[in-house]
Amino acid sequence: MVSVLYKRLISFPKNWGLAACVRFSSNAASSVHEEKVGENLQLRTILDPHASQTRPLVLLFGWMLAKKRHLDKYGNLYISKGFDVLSISVHPTQVLRPTSAQRVVTNVLDLVKDGSLERKPLLVHGFSVGGYVYGEMLIKLQQEADKYGTIRDRLVGQVFDSPVDFEGVPNGFANILASNKLTQAAIKSTLELYMRVFEKTITKHYLQSSGAFHENELNLPSLMLYSKTDPIGVADRIELVMSKWKSKGIPVHTKCWDNTPHVSHFHRHPDEYVEAILAFLEELGLSQSDQEIEAPAAERLP
Image (cartoon, rainbow, N blue to C red; front, top):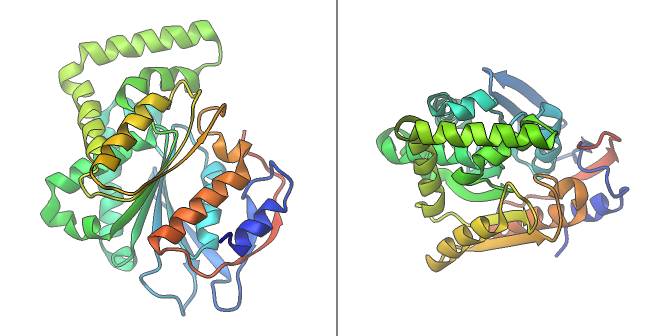
């Protein structure tokens, strides 16, 4: 069943997306509180004194150099469905130095472990190399199960948009940092050399994160959003991961487009993207009463 929210969304002009002003109904929140938590984290919580403390929280693991306004477009969908939103942004230097990425992960886990977030069910939505950062989180949850065991129990599902495995890191960096083909080739070659030279100190962390991602030790139901022609989030690699999960009996939902650029599925196909997300939330039992969308903003994703 297609939700009221989705029907309202598809009535908007095709490429306006979800950067919308959300008008909550009388039994929901009337506003959203935003709080920047350190360099990498942005927490958006619905202000509603009558809401349950177990309202779900989505962890948005952004792509490299993702701007707040871009992640907020995705967060708005979850807020409209009664979620709080924690956006996690990483700088390229933090991806190139896994110890820095691991510090970001520790900050995420410490934040959601205690205080007002400690009882919330957790959903992961990762983009591009955000899948690598999430893999680092899975490793931390394994290594420090005594400290973070409650978080393991609260994770209920995962969504990935154009996830990049370790071998796609050089190509991903090259495409993000440069538009000129020659410059991209130079960056890619340099990073491939970097990963070979520092195999025992740097690349091993990418491989460990990839292994944790592939393993899906918590058997979390998953939704994959990807493109057949994406040169960074490669379809064959994504489908290999999905086949491993399916062989373990893990529910895996997919939406694959024929020719969509990296992390651009929502921009190019907003109706289908929203429908896939809402159907997955319904499957997980996380879809709350629909809220109304008042008006879309004209701002578009690049």
